Length: 259
Image (cartoon, rainbow, N blue to C red; front, side, top):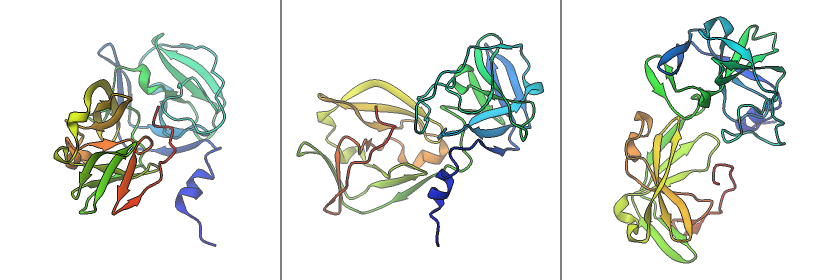
């Protein structure tokens, strides 16, 4: 019997999973390098959707103190919006330099390794390149494909965009996103938002809002190299608008990414 690859991956989500990396991983606090490791691993605690960096304790050049008790994790998948302190694997909570959270794993296959809270450090580097948002999952990718399909975006029957030159962005475990040329979007209906967000694979996004639907669309004014082809193109939360492709209305996906 055939097995869908994504189903196979998700079937092991209740287990602690890890993948070693040969990348040199570094992190700073207050301009000082406190993590420097060529022995790092990506670690997914049970039910975590994105990994954390884990390094041998000897590669942490800072005082490690006892941290606060873990928070209770809710049922279901844990995305980056859930605090690092929600642990689902056995371990001991720690503080790095009395500030950043860490977690000493009780895992025989990762002896002496500590998980590190990405958000608790000032900056992260893979080799000499800055990393943003969260660790870059080695099994996650984006694929941008240009198309001539007819894409219309509507909200409550009002057309917001109409194009025959979309760029379709396929991203692991996420709905297809349709990036549209700005000239094919009715930007007069929108106002710039103060919101910004970081994607580890695409860069920093800026947002557009409608009067009754804040932050409904976004664009990347200065994307990372993997997303360079969608620079300044506009994508919508399909979860909140209707996307019609070649006269076929797509269903609105249900994701945890829209809040």
